[in-house]
Amino acid sequence: MITKLKTLILIASLWGGAVRVNADKLEQHYALLNHLFAEPALNKNNLKSELEGIIQDNNVGFFADYEETKIITLLTKPLISSGQLWFLSSSQVIKVQLKPFVIYTKISNNTIVQLDDLGKKEIISVRRYGALKAFTSAFIGLFSGDIDKLNKHYTIHKKKEPRMWRVGLKPKDKTIRELLKGIIVSGSSRSPETVQIFHSSGDLTSLKITNRRSINESEERKLILDLRFEQ
Image (cartoon, rainbow, N blue to C red; front, side, top):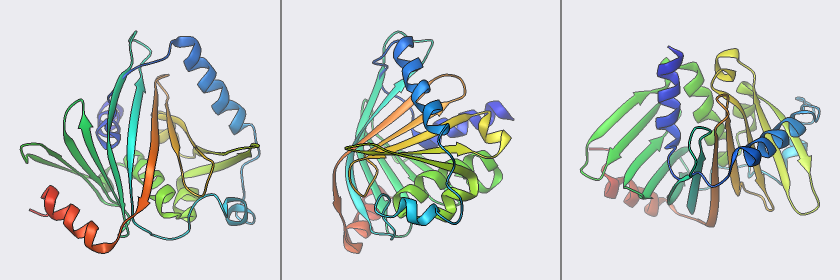
């Protein structure tokens, strides 16, 4: 069961790309995660006030470019993928991977849909897997500003630095912890700029988000039609 869940998590986040750092750098990243988790977890009374001004608080659609780096402990070179990231006002995330090959992924509260460049579709029900549900909730909660969704599955830790902020998400459920040690989200403005996913295996996935801009409903509808998700 755990093996199958690991496969689904990999599909959900489109992990691929290039390993750019060695084992020492991986240890440094994990040390940062542990340092962040040493900070007291935010509680219900101060959660929203502490995150105000960091994570946007409404479902405003946006478009951005991304570069994703996958660091695998067993590999000597990194794997890198890049493309476009769309967050829709309907609380759906669409990831358009353009390099090294084309694949489209739509993540919603209940399903994950993948399309290749030939239009072949695969649908995964999120409801059947608690760990996958928690993972998708983290992404949707981050981009929509749904703090309650984040707090349902993770303890939330915050560290304010001179020029940036970091928020750590530590899984509450044991099943999730068997897959993910934690997630670090960081930025310098009121939106995530980097998302780091720490796998229990020791691997690391880093998503860098740039050139973000707001989109309107007509752009959202055109995207859905162009990518043929509804067919």
